[in-house]
Image (tube, rainbow over all chains, first blue to last red; front, side, top):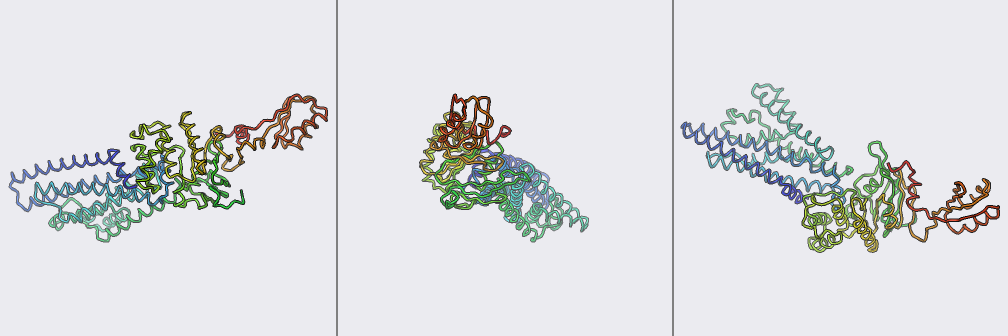
Length: 271
Length: 311
């Protein structure tokens, strides 16, 4: 099933389009970075400041990659289950001697593989560019990359869970809506941290409990940013209130539960 | 049939019922189909034929009742190795070629690549798609999709094959092909369950049919020629028939009607025809013409379904 999912993405040109869009993104990022690096030389900026700006550029690039990955994850996977249930395509598959949960897991693994490749290529691309042009890379690259990957996998699992209950469109609206909630909650938490309004921070935490995707990004940003930016809390990229390690465990549990719900529901529903 | 061991039966259901959010799709399906039979499910649209088949295949979960296929409870994953299914509207990933489609399905059946390498060309040839084996399914006509769906249902040489409206979208040659395939499967010893509303097709291919109305088996009927007379109509053109004489015919038939100078009797056997004629003559009736007619499947279908059916 995973293999078929891969092939589907390749045949439907989805994979190639995603790679092309990713390539275009990297070119744009590289161009911006190039001019920025040129200006460093012209203005004769202090090395510390230069380093901090370059670090911010890395985080900015990764932030965009994160956003792209979130959208790619949801958009590419919303139709795979609900669409096949609606069209009846699933009937020829679900009557084969393979338990339904394995069919679902196979599809999930297929998407998981694709988004892993996508995120790895994009994150490494951004870092390679900044390293080549400005001599910096994200601080804890592996940790950051893992957290960004996990964010997409959480969303993938939630999409699958919703798709076993609802139509394609409803699934998309629900998953994006939930991520939007987490996104907004994240910003409320940041502002709450700046103004030291504990209740606002709590609102953000509750949003993260409902959907931990955005919290994973903020933890990733914290891991990847320069220590100075983190210490001074000057970066615009969400490190004022850092999600705890417990939140990462929670997200892992959340992901597993969503996947189990998807497998159970898919095994028990009429097709 | 009731006495048969369930393992001798390809299908065994008792009181199978399915309710979709308050709406009864299948009321009470009680059915036994012995192995090796080509069995037709007949009924108007919305009678619950497809839902019944889906319950037997484990696609739809029954609200109540029990069902077994090939001696195992419905939903048993291992049993599915021996089952083939052509859904009513066969759809599959349209970016695949027919060869790839069969390979994907074969892998899902757990068949080895070596076995598939052997089997796929044979099946493509059987359904007449060898010249199109490099095309993508998206370029296929409805009839071609139906053919590849049929090939997919036969991949694993199943013991039990469900064909849901297999000839829909097929031209006469395609329909002939389906008939030949069903016959070949029967000769191989497989059980075929044919869901169709094309009575002629069922009449030609099936050993037995069940008439389904409102999600219930109204009647099952053998289609062997020896039993032609079982449901026959005796039509007698006669004069001087009084109501009293007509009612006297009820000893031979449960249903006696008078239409002008015609007497119509439903009879289960032709052996009583001489007796009926003797009775009429003895009562002073002028008998002009006696015809024993087998009720065709279509007439029986309409009789069961009624004119308001088939909506």
